Amino acid sequence: MTATDDGTLTRYVVLIFEHQTPNWPEDMPPEVMAANEQFDDHIAREGGRVVAAVALQSSATATAIRGDVITDGPFIETKEALAGLYVLEARDLDHAIAIARMTPVADGGIEVRPLLDFVADPG
Image: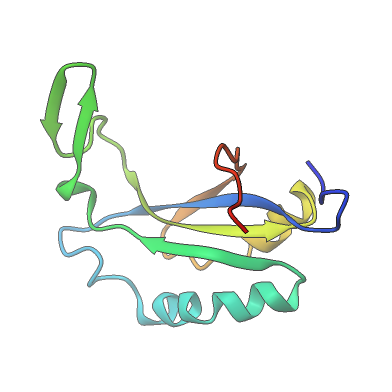
């Protein structure tokens, strides 16, 4: 995927996976929290743009739905859980990956995916 013909940037999601402690997110290192607060500025300097940023409560608060079955907590036991996400705009996948590598993560990893936009822009 690349920037559109009109020069606008393509949207990507950066999924943040973290090892979660019983006191998540209070146990998040302060330097990681501070780095997240300045992430928008870092992305802008690299020529991208953060469209949205979301942090999730602990995976212990999750409710999983699979067909007719509803369970409390995460569906699959994992060491890392989805902790938050950024939606960003970048020129192409290589640009999105370069930007995503700057994502502050305490003890986990990230995943980058292009977004499919099914909703027309009302603008």
